[in-house]
Image 1: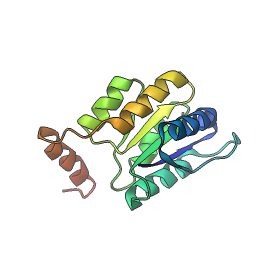
Image 2: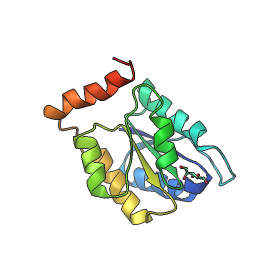
Image 3: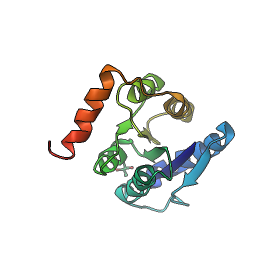
Length: 147
Ligand code: RB5
């Protein structure tokens, strides 16, 4: 599976750790930057990862900022994206099973690396449950068309 990942300056250090971890797990990683912790604007990097997911270059995306919140808000503006800001592995599982999230956003400042690793691993290994959740996810996507 191809995984696209990016951060802003606040998430840079954690992004670097997660890139290494994703390689350890055997994923193909598209690192969309940044390549240092110079100050940047998180929507620019959310757009790169969202673009990879929507185009099919990556099946899933990972975004890291200070809280993960700004990245989720930005990524969710892109048609076809369901980004979930996640702080526990349990929520990562539910974001996949119930919401079919295709991008997970995590906090580089307030959540430990060990927890973020568990979140990302769970997010990538958990399948969408479908069934009763499928119609709800479709209704979410229909909102983008103002249906
Ligand atoms: C940057 O200071 C910070 O605002 C950003 O990383 C993120 O937490 C926004 O949601």
